[in-house]
Length: 437
Image (cartoon, rainbow, N blue to C red; front, side, top):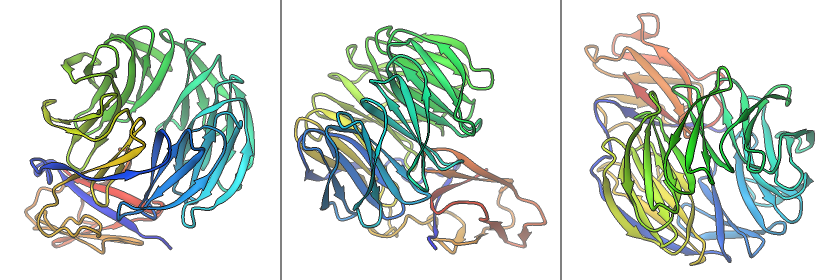
């Protein structure tokens, strides 16, 4: 049985803010690297090489350990941590290839709709959703058996997907339909169709306020959707050609990269008002949030990655990594950010300085905090030892996407003097964050 790896954060002590970033490695891969995903169980990164029709598998030593042949013009990846599988959408092959996350071998190729171009994973029901751009539908795949459960018509040219874990719903942006379809995660039926702007392009989920943000590429704005009512709350002007969104759950902010305006719009996740608009360089088109050090990474066509403090929204550093930054992935074990450089045929690895006492190839521990967590990794029960006087009223457990999966109130029933015990029953194997408040 796999164990849980626990990474602790504290609102009073930001454990890695202020440490330097640098370019740790540049890894040659195939032709035109396009998309990335992280295997949290085996600590590997998968990179689609769209013109090579293959996937490069990168290990923790920054080496390509295998190249997996897939379908014609593979363009999207998603990871299934329940069964340790990687799914890749093959655009011109009209199929999804399933890869074993341990052996990196192809398990199966699944026929889906025409021109599949986006994937998302439903961890509640262990399903993979595949948006088919050419057939105006979404294919639903059983994550255990890799068989097709259902095909759902959603609207003209489905282009992007995101999952809402609070309501167990999948949101699908239809680029020609000017709408977002809402799919029930249990019945796999469309329960709402929401009009948005012209050419909805990308989606992001705000887990604190239960909202979905939809960037409308040809409208230059972001539509905010209330997930409880599936109605539009507001539309926020951003900049020309908004191409990427990312959510910062620590500060409850949404970042929107405006490719043709060369700007980044920062949106307050509670009020849905623009906090600031930042000049960030030539054609920003990729974003990722690193919750360990609370930083946002913005990639550009010109190959500069701009690193932004997620608290103050100021630029910390700019690093040249390779041309055509197209996608990011984050590895929490070594606190690395991976960048797919489309024109340079490389994956760049960005690294934060590691505080004293944290080993390079071991999970980040909480020993640097004024408390002790053990065992780490944990299997069934987690113990937290801290001073009796410490203000530990609540403990929250988040997964790597920022989803809060459990909240524990600290009471006399679960605290024995200086030790708090937490049952991990029902929590799937993976990497998690603890937040104390």
